[in-house]
Length: 333
Image 1 (cartoon, rainbow, N blue to C red):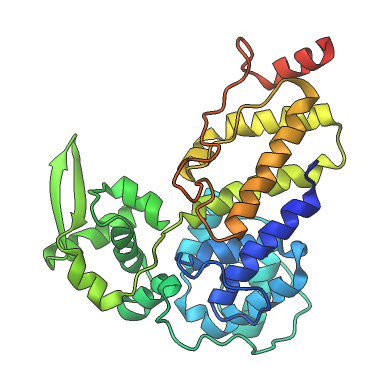
Image 2 (cartoon, one colour):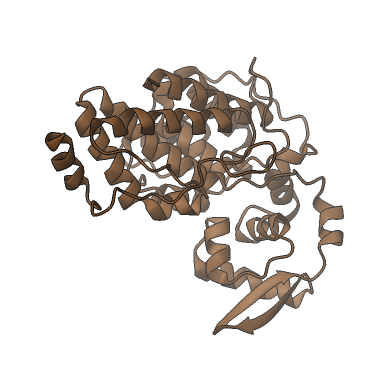
């Protein structure tokens, strides 16, 4: 059966690959060169799960000390809040360490800094690689909602999006998004129309914007949502070693049912699970399979030929919709 160690290995491969794209010294290959790197979710996830690899955590802190001017404190806070991790003690220790060595002023409450020694080994030679589109836009337009809006429109150049859509895409509040949309429309960068009682915005012309900020990556993975899913899965699997297969199965079903909106936002749909304790190994195989695909640098739920992989709405056996039903079925079997 797939194990926590398997999951840890693939998650770390993903993290090391993305930090390597940002200039962190690493021996792993760059497997995300054709995807955009989203710095705030990457920082938040690395901090919260720093115990997976303390060396990577320290290397990431070293990077933040050198290039933290490209990071949005407001967006970092919003990402953590959306994950329910705003008061996470592990992130606060990370933030306290960044503050102690760089005076960044991140929210750390009364947390004490980690034992850390700056290395100055991270080198971001330039921002011209496609994967660094987000940082490149920030270098041109400043760090804030406006830069993220431009990135969001470039990721979906043929879509007309509402302020609510764009809030989800950018990680900034709806009011902040609205404040930045009007100047972009006024300048002729965006067009808008009203439909279904909402204003919808789209790029007036993508070519001039692409020419200014390109080259673009081939994919714009929704990493804030992907890392939120990984965070929930890691926490569940961490606890599984202390529980029975039946209890783990119940917890897996509960997570799928209670966080179905989270999975949908990441365009990730867990497979149907069997009843009873057998649900846990099936769930674990899927989790590790998902993490392995992410680490390989490809879309996490698509095959090479374009077919969807495991994109099946979660469904329980007929007449059984609650985690408690799984307990009863397991005992009855």
